[in-house]
Amino acid sequence: MSDSDRRTTGEQVVREMFGEEFLRQNLTSHADGEGPGADLARLALDQCFGEIWSRPGLDRRSRSLVTLGILMAQGHQWEIHNHALGGLNNGLTAEELLEAVVQAVPYIGLPAAGQAMSSVARAVAEA
Image 1 (cartoon, rainbow, N blue to C red):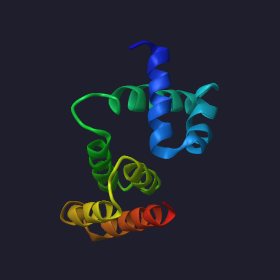
Image 2: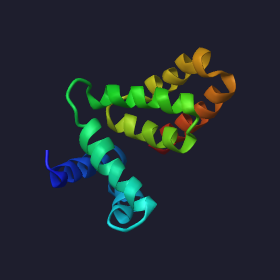
Image 3: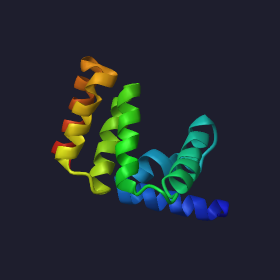
Image 4: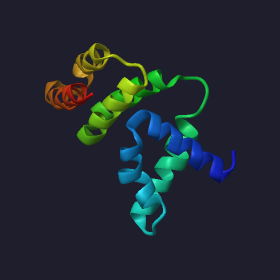
């Protein structure tokens, strides 16, 4: 896949998962610039979404669930919120998202799960 194809694919995946406004505000507006923020935005668009999220083997719904589990374990609340919204757009239900947090309790602990539940519940309420 060429670099321009990867970028186009990455932008489309982000647009479908998070919406045009998210894509513009958080990624494309930075990817065309210079500096570390631009580098991270390009990596997110080209590698994360243009390459990884577009691979065969797992559908986006499954990728969303895996990603949420990883983000919960790491405690990245902003990303949990965004990926919960993306998960809804990828076919996960509100019940499945909330149950994923409960499933994580024995592995990440109650305090981390409580924070994750708050982020997921906020995303569900916004959707």
